[in-house]
Image (cartoon, rainbow, N blue to C red; front, top):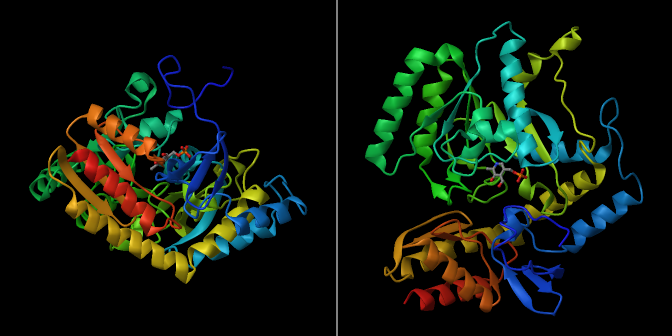
Length: 410
Ligand SMILES: Cc1ncc(COP(=O)(O)O)c(C=O)c1O
């Protein structure tokens, strides 16, 4: 094997399955077997595979302008995309910086936040606050931001910058303790804190861990009163995953910086955005080159990716997709409620995401194997299994997944 796969122990992993095509919620392997993609292929494919309108938009753009350097040049697909997104984002988020994936969107946010203070002559704001267990990507900065509490990255901790982790609350009582500890930390250290970074409402890679909008508002308000910037990493939660266009829509406060990627292009092309406020942008606006944001990637705002995103965002707003989003969310609530309690520690859902903590990682693995044998792809996170389907999924297929799980658990 010449290819080294991501998140894979190559020695013990089974041979990767070769997929040859996709349509709607289905993927087809080289033997013609059909699978329901219940995880939207790492949470990116929200509108179904090989969606024809998105494919056509990319094709049309490829015949017109496939790429152009984005420093000193611009193009319609990028401008159209930011106009579409502006209709749905909080009004305060009006400046868009493009990059290529979720991790780079986070890197951009971290650098932007730090330089925002530097440009104002403030040099000692270098601590980031995060929420325990969070995940923001695999580049060094994104790993650092999540802190050593993230089990994915702890072996690299000697390269990490300083962070303070807010305790992840297990219940309402725990929220008080988390806020208390945060406030004590801020009293002593607020002058050195640059930004808070969190996955709003749902921590994806941590195991679809969910927390309340009230708690999110409280940590934002506790931090913001010291002039610390707020970064929402909506790489996973964006585009109706939590039921609303952005998780941000469910709370009182808007962030100063928001990271978007994954579903942005409907899962067709890698691209991301770091969106910020006029206030942050103006800290970089200067006659001095040193105050500019010196960051970029070769493929920044690739026109094919922008064309895919424009098409995806338009489809996302259609009545049909909006109705499916509501039906998926309701189905999760009903079906989770009906699961046998045996072998399940906890269940939860938020919008189109449902998660079930089983009694052991082995059981979760077995559940995934049974699902696979029945033509449904899931990918457990330890003892947690979750469904995060494309919005085009038929409710019959979603029900079937719950039926198989129910029978297995019984
Ligand atoms: C919340 C969050 N942020 C950032 C990332 C990193 O995105 P990417 O894998 O595109 O680098 C992920 C990926 O799962 C994520 O869930």
